[in-house]
Length: 404
Image (cartoon, rainbow, N blue to C red):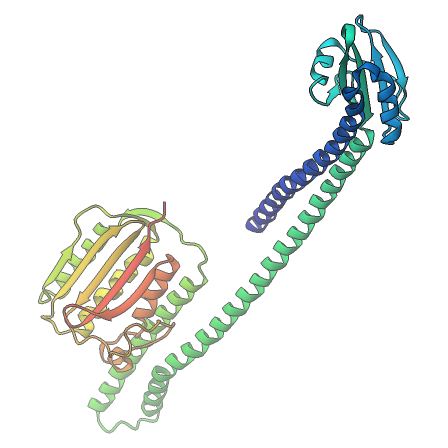
């Protein structure tokens, strides 16, 4: 819910900023365009008296009438006394000081005392001036109207952006729930299939023992051993299924910072004790601090080494390397065993996928080790790849992004 709220707020801020920038640019451009029209009107009116300065007043009044411009014209004496020669329909007074007159001689300006008047001046003999002014009230009204329109547009854009974010979030949630439901259905179907074999064996031997159909005590003993073996295998399978379900339901990783190299080295030492005949080469030249789920990565390493112990010849070599490059950690585990079928390499791993179903029965495993390893890597946003190793067996290639 907090993430959705932040998304909506972020969308509103971004939409407001973009709308404000684009709208302000458009409004300012429109205002400047209208202002240029007023300035051109002023320049048209003043052009005639500038060409006939000996009769500037009459030329100015005639030019205003000919050009049909609502312009006010004032005569200003050397002592700054003003006489209105022609009134505008929108104002009757134009207050101006000597500094503004000097500026208005070269270009149109806004009068300091009245920002609603745009004025231009021309100099007459004996330090006298003619002042021409046009009202900008219509421009100012249009500016305020456009600002209100921009505000309304921003509000509408924000409303639509919020609706879009909420709709998209709901659509993603529905799709995610649908995918989770589909995965759960597949998981339950596969789990039922995996549990069916040991349950069938247990049921068969239980019925034989209950009906006392075992010919000898030795057969009965072997039946009990078989029951115990299948129960143990089913227990392992259920534990692995629960772990897969737990990892699949985890949306965020509970992270802690630890030395991945040290964790790996500890398990390699344990492996050397359990399988002393395997020649192991471990390559890691530096401290490899990593932020992740230590419990799940520990299970990943255990599964990888347990697979080597169970499914490779006792004297087959093992090479394990751990390195970091850029923003990822690279873990490569290679063995000199028989490896997997060529068709398997490069394929994606699906939950409950067994590459060799028979070998899990022979060794007592659930056959889900690879699925668990893949799930652990996926929960850390990494990549899990199986390929043929340089030793001729299986290479487990793991790449984990480094969280800063």
